[in-house]
Length: 178
Image (cartoon, rainbow, N blue to C red; front, side, top):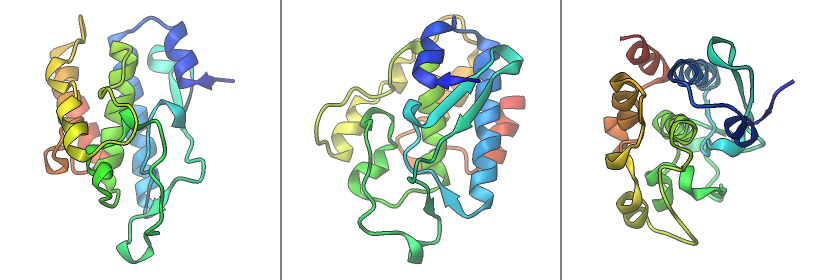
């Protein structure tokens, strides 16, 4: 049946194999979403339903009406950035339009939360991009026994500069397999 991500994460011990499979499955889900010409724009634990464990973990992305077209001419100017802000890509705080790389930041934030028990950014109230970037804890990843490859991938997914992130979910999947 499955359960909300936060409930699932609280009930399951952190496992490197589960994190790797979760990341791969989320990348596949984004690949499918992006192929339709849309982005989620606000991925976080609130937008994920999970069932299973290890190689049997199956995440389901919930757009909840937040998916937006990639085409600039179709982007609604009044599109509100939803909470929870601690999981949003830094560029969204300045009102930049969401991209594929915005979604990749989101799945990095979800897996970071699973591995560490905390959001990648500690934020309260209204903040600017500068504040968000200054509070990103990527340099302080506390991943314990997680393989170095996970740290490398998460650091790239959570890069404050979108150009330093993977260019696509397909590229991310290749990086997971290296």
